[in-house]
Each structure stands twice: as structure tokens, then as C-alpha cells.
Length: 333
Ligand code: NAD
Ligand code: AKB
Image (cartoon, rainbow, N blue to C red; front, side, top):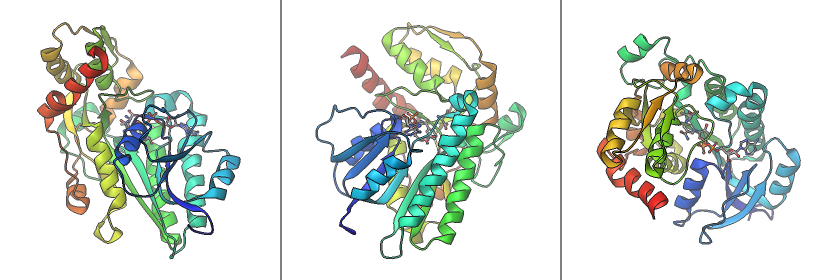
């Protein structure tokens, strides 16, 4: 207890794709009880979760934080709540409020609460959207992008992610007891959940459509290429960073790598398991252009060295051991 308040791990955006996977992983035990915040209710499917309380509401609502902080004292904050890239472009004012203001307020709250005796660790999932390659030719020619290269985001979402990374580093410098770190995630693919509002969504969408036996209308061109990572590997990476001592870290923001895959390559691989897969290309120029500006691959040497990032899946087992069995279970029983 700290001032009568219960120390907790706080997860915002916990009802989202990563939040659900994180909660599932944290249910394996250890650590403080978890308190969650999201606009949406949490799925109650897993009664084993060591979950203490869910606050359904807006991270921008100060009454929500007053209520939460009366009873709980976060020691670790995993700030996931966000509006993803495609949706952010269509609701720019809201996206700014949630992605930039919301994170800034939460950082200010953490800075107010943190002391050298009662420190707070703040973990921020950033994105490959912080990078901006000027053209498809530049993207094709680029080596796996390192953390300090091509930091020229073309989307609102990417600019907001980079801003929060920089703000977090600045607030950390000004605050004894606040420890901020960020991990730039690639496109994620889960066998259990589907994404909403992102630009890397075509890959998970088409894999899930194949398993449901439905045709898929792909909004990027067949050569569109991004790094993709299995959801459990990404969650493991986030947690490794979250629990690593500060002395081991040499950066504020780390790349988490993925398998560099084009839409055509994903289709060819998925068709091995689902030969009836039917894909039509119906280009969405805005989304296709966003993908053209994001790197095809990122260099995660620093994360491997500093916090032991190691993915369980290689490119083949991503499909054969993780995605295909999970997706078949989900749709075909
Ligand atoms: P998601 O959209 O599934 O989840 C985001 C959650 O935030 C949702 O449940 C939503 O209800 C909640 N939310 C949005 N606005 C809110 C608000 N004002 N108040 C409270 N809750 C709010 O996204 P995700 O894939 O789980 O992503 C989690 C984080 O990881 C995000 O910050 C995202 O930018 C980042 N990220 C995700 C990916 C990916 O491929 N999934 C890649 C890179 C970075
Ligand atoms: C999105 O497409 O917005 C996310 C991301 C890569 O940040 N999946």
C-alpha cells in the first residue's frame, strides 16, 4: 500500500487487440494487480485473470482519473489507448486529442505521482509510423531502418507517436522517479482478434477472411510490404522492455522487428493452407500511400542487445505454428 492506495499495473486501451493479449499474458501470474481503462467494456471471458477493476471511460475524462487514483497507485503504466493510423487521418481533431493530448495528460499525471521512493515506469507502444520514406524507390533501396533514421512521419498518427516518444523522454529528464520507455511496433497479426482502423490491417484481415472462407478485397497493391510480427512475440517484447532495469537500456525508443512480407507473399503463403482463398485488389490510395512511406523492415539490434528481445517465430512458424492452428480453431472449431 502507498498512502492507503493499492499499487497496480495500469493498462489504458486494455480492451484493444494488444490489451487483450497483454491481459491474457499477465494472467500467467506475478506482479501487481492490474487496473484497466478503456472506452469499451472488457471481455469477461477469462475469470482467471488477475484483474482488479476496469474503468470504462475516456482517458481524457479527469473524473475517471480522480476516481481511479483515490484507490490505486500505478507503479507501471502501459499506455495503449490510441486511434490507429487510418482512422486518425479521418478524425484528425479527435486523433490529436486522444493520441497526443491524452498521452500528455497521462504523462503529466505520472510525473505528479512519481517520487524517487515511489517511482513510476511508463511504457509506450509506438509504431513504425514514426518513419517516413520519401518514395517507393527510397523504401525499396533502404536497409532495415535503425531508430534514428528517416524520422519524418507523413501521417498524423506517426507524428503523434513521435511527439509522445519525445515528450516522454523530456518529462523523464525533468522528473525524479519517472522512467519512460517506448517500443516501435511493426504491423501485428493475431490469430484471436482482428484489428480496426489501422493501415497494416490488410494482412490480418485477409488471413482471417481465408479461414472464414470469404473473399477478401485488399486495399493495398500486391507489392506493398511491411514488417509483421505475431501478437504473442510483440507482447513478450513489450513486457521484456517493461520489466528491464533502466541501467541496461541505452535508448528511449526501440524498434521491435518483424518479418518483411508483401501482400502477394502473404497471399501465396495463406493459399497453401486455404487454397480457395480469393483476393481482389481494390486499392485505397490513401492507405496504399501510407504503406509506401513506412519501412519494409526495421533493425531491432538494440532491443535484442538491451532487453533480450527474441521472437519465438520465424517467418514460416509464424504461419505454421501460430497463425494457422489458432485461426482454424477460432473459425472451424
Ligand atoms: P486497438 O485499436 O485494438 O486498441 C486501442 C484501444 O484504445 C481500444 O480498445 C479503444 O477503445 C481504446 N481507446 C481509444 N480511445 C480511447 C479513449 N479516448 N479513452 C479510452 N480508451 C480509448 O489498438 P491495438 O492494436 O491494441 O494498439 C494498442 C497500442 O499499440 C496503440 O497505441 C497502437 O498505436 C500501438 N500499436 C499497435 C500496432 C498494431 O499493429 N496493432 C502497431 C504499432 C503500434
Ligand atoms: C496501424 O496500421 O496503424 C498500426 C501501426 C503499424 O501502428 N498497425
